[in-house]
Image 1: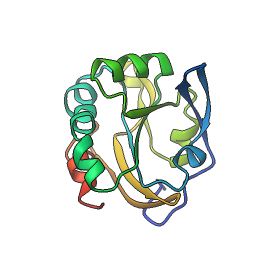
Image 2 (image 1 turned 45 degrees about the horizontal axis):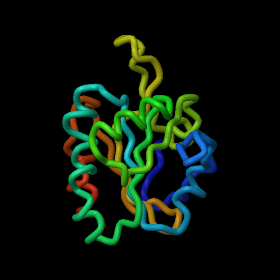
Image 3 (image 1 turned 90 degrees about the vertical axis):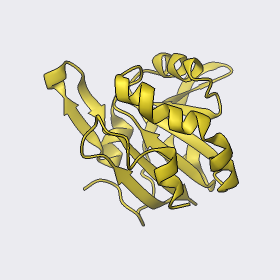
Length: 160
């Protein structure tokens, strides 16, 4: 069963980039007590993720700030170098990229997606969640990974 409203964030590790290079990051610790939006994408540089999903959070920073969102985290099963390049291409340095190349965070959240038929392998499904104090306040996912209606910045802000 995927993570849901009322659940505490799992103790799962991904990779983030710091000034000293890539390093491990625990999702629960990374979020801490901050009011945070975490959104997941199947793959950086893929059409829907690049054209429809990440841009809503990249250009929606002012609306997120106004709603009291203290940080935004994007996670994907891509490696951290791909995620950093993708983020830079969108001018969205305010978004923390959480690489989940091993799928540990994806599995802990139970949001995995088998895209092996498309040659993409195990991926994170498209989702967005609002987290406060380490507890999920709202969680939304798309039935169709090619859609981005319920998981955009505007859609998750309805729960802020």
